[in-house]
Length: 362
Image (cartoon, rainbow, N blue to C red; front, side):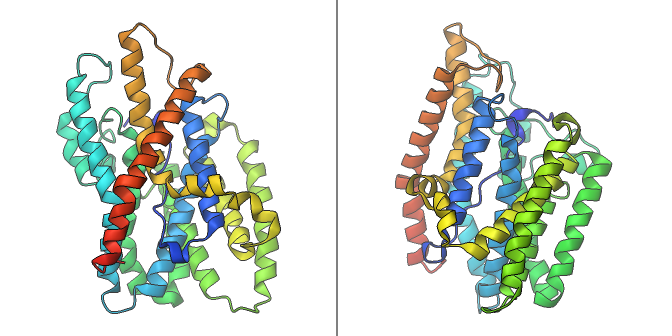
């Protein structure tokens, strides 16, 4: 797979039930998806925006492992987990895949990036890019859907990790998470693939480790204050690592680990400080609402950008992707993305979530 700026993002984590939602985490999702979108529409303004991938993966690992450890051991818990993930993620994903396939066929003579319809089954099965494991080129980028490799990573993680949690239990899950982090870093350094589960699992593993650690803390544990302070120190050191290494040298290797460590540390401090006055900016309503719809914002924004590219080319206007693009175009793309994501949440995602609760999947 050709690695380019448009595909170095990650899918936002679909959120848990409203009753267990932490507003600060919604705020963090809002910040992450804003960075990702700005990275794509105005790359020179947000050159590190692609690091939203690592924030989303850390939060995903934390939330999924927390759910598995607190609810997965109940009768039918594993089945409910899979139904919840499917009903949250699949509907608009498959809608977008099929719509993009139809659009790619319709504009096949109008856009320079030719669609590889033979690769469509990989997208339908969340297997995009797996050819790289056996020496392939990482898979063809289907126009408008190249960014969904991150959804493939998360779906593969959701499929495998519940069985790891069952096998290890709380006692051995922390070492297993640490081992997964090490394996991922070594694999990435050896192969330079960061768009595969093995090559980008360190954020998911650190999030899982965080879940184990926080669930093991008692209400009055002296470790709470220590971890809160340690998270801030670790975040500061991670920032030094991120900005100390030239961006083009570390984008797929060490920078991924440094970003995962940064967001692991920040998530630790935020989760141990939720409700604190100094975290009020993360609880601003518009930001938390953006976090709620961040899955749709992420999923729709690249196809919408592609649509604008095709439409503008028809009238003789073209701009390089993510570089020196005028703000009027960036504004149109972001406004359209937010509008579509809001409509998607209102008329597709939220009704399905309500249906999920009624049929007992939640």
